[in-house]
Length: 517
Image (cartoon, rainbow, N blue to C red; front, side):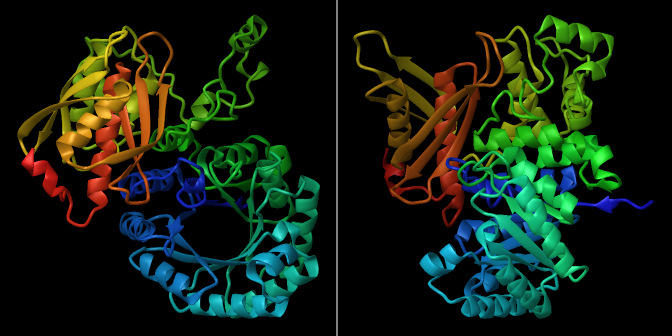
């Protein structure tokens, strides 16, 4: 019996990026897209081309390097949006345009201020125009979860005639219950038949996104739109890892259904996305949370040791959690380090391996125990590195009790070391002000977060900052790693500065003020 494949449409780079604080630069999006392809995602929604020049560039770059997965751009049912989408994906080997318009009474009345027949006309025109760029056109009924069934059937029938090949039914505000989604999809499947593929895009406002997605699959949906770690607007989207593993584990329910996902790449993908966005899944998050395969209870430990399936319905190895016995420390060599990062699922150039190994050796001199997550953090930091216009050399701080916090920082720029100092409202503020003085570029800190990569007093600190430079928007993200939180903070701020400069016209174009220092 041939397998009934459920297509996985990943929208981490579009809807996932809409999570507050999850914005990514172009290089980071390219790295995630390549990992999504390695994961086996069928369709990658790379962004919303008309939203910004940065989104357009990211989709264009992803189109150049992704050759197995379909590369998709979102577009409103507007000619200018669709044109931007078509232009952004023209270099992709496999292309798709995803256009949408709202169909619920509340959206049509208050947001669109259009009559239902006007909405249908706009939808048909959008699909026809999108077909001039690619044969693969997806149409979404925004807020389908609160739309009238009769109107859904009418608009879907018309867009199928116009050439839509995939029809997406989003529960945009996470309103539906599983039995309601199943009934709706079953009725629409009967109406649509084999004329187009039915898709679902469920939000998690009531915590039902995955349940609603799976109910829809049982009712006839053959594409699920989801994100890594469940990222997305408000409470997020259906989590890819949960949808995929539910289909894999419960074969008694999903029969001959399957996905094209290489499940052993789930955990590496989750870690890459969390390292880049700075949004870490909660410890008890299904599948990829750090406690998902941890057992503290003595009864559970005894049961698992005697027979794994007593308390585990899937193996940690199934999602890419490696139980390799190699223990890395300060006496480990480059060969062992390279083998470890390969086992963890990463493919690095020799130069990237050398850079990551140097950072590893520095870390190993300060830590008694190196965990896999330490290695993942080092590697993720290396593969998303942007061109280093500025590079931190050394730093000296004065934050004694009762004194004025100050920082002296030395930065390398064009093979020249520049040192300056500043005082601040606190040590972090002093560090950032000093970097501003050296670069001649003023930054406004919008967000600052620090997380311990692993446990223990000597845990590696990961600092994520969000900064607006020269009052230009959007804000850029910066990442820094070190056992020393202050050092990690300086690295994160310089990372954000370098990211900002890389996005400016003329890479590394420096503010004239800095050459006068």
